[in-house]
Length: 125
Image: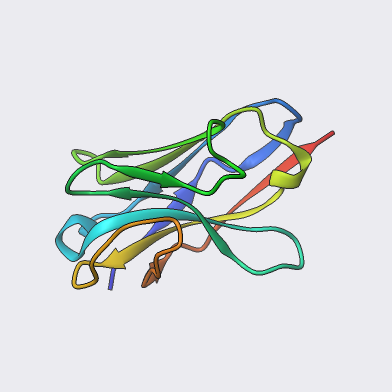
């Protein structure tokens, strides 16, 4: 099992920025792919960004492309999501996730196997 802990959520006004962090000790031994998921109020959870631990290649959902940036600090075992130009529709819970290394590929539509508990982000108009 991979333990994941998100931090950095909070409240911000429209067009503001936040950076989410996810500590994941041991993730690199279990995975080649990490990602972020978003769950709006009353709706399901969808992938929005992913990064390959081998190549650093990233993949984004269209709704966050050019506004959000996923990155990884291997030395600190920490995954980040820099969120800029936030909109009220970005309000919801953000989860970091790890994909088992036995599964090929890494994209925001990939299936993931371990999850953090989530970080709440609220964007006001």
